[in-house]
View 1 (cartoon, helix red, strand yellow):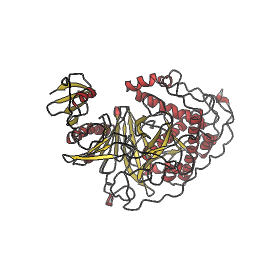
View 2 (tube, rainbow, N blue to C red):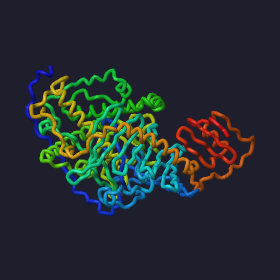
View 3 (spheres, rainbow, N blue to C red):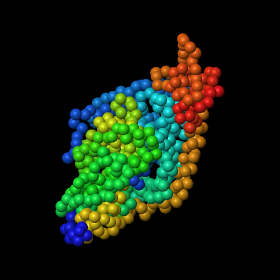
View 4 (cartoon, helix red, strand yellow):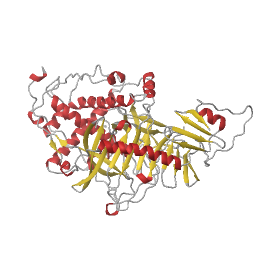
Length: 582
């Protein structure tokens, strides 16, 4: 029995993670983009890319037209370059802001003038081919996909960004006047973040709400590649002995029964994920813990999407390869070493440096790195096509981004299939989203470490030495944090309701662009027909109507329905089919 095993000898200390060379601080007046990305899932020598070229997709050719005070931009093509050092591309237009992301005397940082990046959407400068962007006279922006569906909305008056994911999810991010942030998504999940300062740096305390459960995480703010990223900061640290026991090999490999056999999520993803048969160290145990948490979240999200379920069932994904799992296990070990170094600093009442804890350190060591998705994310591939990834998918960033890159160039190395980005697809990933993936890794590892310490010596796990069983201590940054937001669920629900109203207001004020083409006029040219007259009937699809009557003069997107306005009639569509003709 595992409970009768003798404690292992004191482990060697985990090596400290090396910090990167100091990055240049943004000068006052430097151009910056205020990041609003978030993750919610879980809170959310390996293979190389030899033989693959990593494509960097630039913004492509755009055409612009103005109508009724609104500006319309159409992306009509993309350009792909082989750029091993990272993706370049044009930056989004921004306003000057001071270092730290705040304006003079603590005023809110100026927002970007367009859709720089919305949580879950494509990175700036890498819009899908055929997408259309409409800007109203009030500064609001709507981006639609080539099929006319709404993708992103920026509501200037509310400081609100909305992203409609390819999987049907909607993400809402609002930064309020006091610099607090509300993030909401489908199902009432989300968080409220309140900023504070400690040791001369800005931090944020997030109160997450998910199906009746509250929990908190902390994040440091770090300037990287022209924008601010939120970097996970542990709320507690374990002893040096525990990090060493988790980092170093155990005395002998052990078998472990997770109890997943009858779980629906495990049966659903059985072709994709197989746990290790034995565990030589905690890093491998934590790797399977990480995948299990991610895939459980992916299964819960897919359960609400019948179309995704059907597609995935008919197209089983290739399994996670041993090489990819080894790369993830290596990242787990690296994060254990990082947190061990942070724990040593915390013991001296020093806060960890976000530069050393963020993706900046990872992407500056000259090695490829893998990231596991902790939430839904829509990406753009090297051909300008949009595709999603979700919890449990894995991407690899093979090298450091170029100094002027606005996104990381990555390769999908593991995909759950269906409508998601296929394995070996080259994609561009926003730095805020990449940081969220690292946050998801660290948050899940910390949760797994808590389980590991509680279960050591049981169920087949080896017994930890006494030095590894002492309780964790609080991080120094938590003492200065504001209290948890006990009203978070109501604030999340309020912003979701406000987003419904805001989208209707913006849609009614903005003309809608024609279909994907090189046109610069909002109204379509007249169509000359021969043969029998065109007919329209209830139940016809949008393609059938536009095939007979051409593109409308305008489209009113009212959320649950769309109204196509022609010269002598109005056609209402619900769920893509005609329901009314006026």
